[in-house]
Length: 403
Image 1: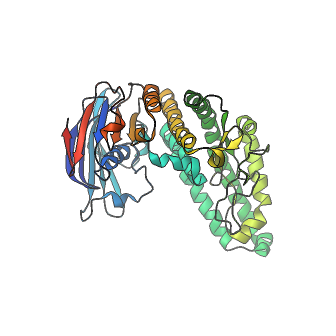
Image 2: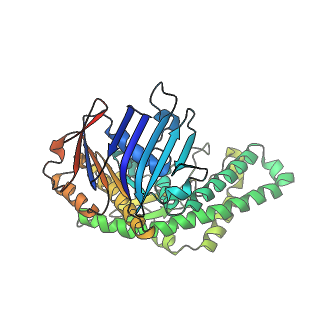
Image 3: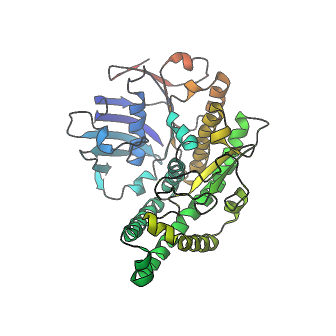
């Protein structure tokens, strides 16, 4: 896949720009706040219909403008395609593919894979489990548009179950509501089992690639990655049933329990279904009290270990940063091998945080098979790296100057 032109109208800080690209490597230079990240964000939006940041789509419209437009001519599978998104107030999105309006955008997004390396990726390692779940689910949505729709169905069933819980007490469950709740339980477990199974299958592949790439950056350190089921170990909901807590122990050590690495690699759909349903029933009393569903794929987590200890608590900032980069490299490998399309790569100010050896190693691992956009605030950060043929732009006052 290759972006030939990119046009932005009333997008973020850009009133109107149009750029044409002919190289596989595009370097964007500019001071902080110049709009480098905004441009990469627009490329990501083309292929996903959303920002890589947690932000309402309506906020992407330039202040005071009635709408925003992202328009691009892209080479997809050897053919030129015109891809257009119009963002309207309130976040409504209209998409046209070769001038035809589309209602089901997911089928097109699968044709346009984009992988972004961002400083924000550190939250996958350090922050709430929701970021680690979204990391897996975003990849699964790129691999299969059906996963996105299936996850929406699960979320609707979850909302219905929580709504039913809000109107229940122990008495109403035992007298009159049990059959209704049992039906929602079975639907939730059926849909949830598929989500968990898809995540586990993906994580097995990601794990091999992740460990391979970590081995390039570190020697003499043992890393691992595995799935933590919400019904294993520490309860996944806080006392009020809504605040997530870490399923790893507070000390940061990973105990030898059902959620360990061997278990997630051996789990089959039937076993997951049975364990999920039985634990959901066991949690029924608590769920009625808290008015919330305390277990399921919406509460699961991923843990990365360093010599058997949770990297969130025992890893250095550098180890955590490299871990987030290697997760993206693993994602790139999975997409490249499973959808038969070359993703577009976006490196947002990532190189500035690495030493010269690791900068060069990262670019070597990425290779030159992909169209790659790199941002940097200062040319000094990358001047010692062999970039090869590339287009260099200076961004100043919302204008792009080709060097």
